[in-house]
Length: 255
Image (cartoon, rainbow, N blue to C red; front, side):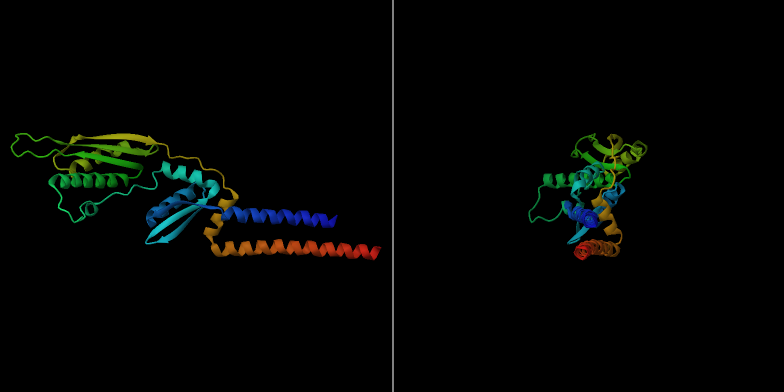
């Protein structure tokens, strides 16, 4: 009776410990090649939704994010709804990098417009509440013989968090584009706003997420806890062996 009690008790403890350790070890790579800033922002966002995440340096200033396999779909959905990972925009230096060939005036013009679009998109994307932004600028070629020059125009497409009032800063966005492009007028800048629901419901923590957050909070204490837990399991197993032998010894004495 005692022997069976010990076996059942410590068997359940051993299975539970192995289950927690196994789940905490099942990691899935979420994204790689992230900058430190973006990796920190994405990790902080996932932690707000109670998703355990590991941020690992991969060299050359890049980072990767890992999450528990069971929360992979949740993490991907949450990051996507918040516009992560952010689009990489080209700056003027990258657009006009010397490629070793002489560019035609048309190519130089196309590069210039692309650089303007990229820089404006990047600037607007950094506004609080903006999930993503696209700017498309049209600058007609100037005809020195024409009495009236065709005006420049621009279209701005913004996906934003529905809980943020982006419309309040729309005039500032139009003024930003107006001042950045030669020949642009305020009325020739159109802004299209599309609300996005970023409030993805957070689920309750699973055992893997609990273990991961505990490990990241204090790795030393986490390691010590695991060692103590394993020691208890081993000690319980040894205790069951001792109890078994004592039962045999008592049985032999009574016989």
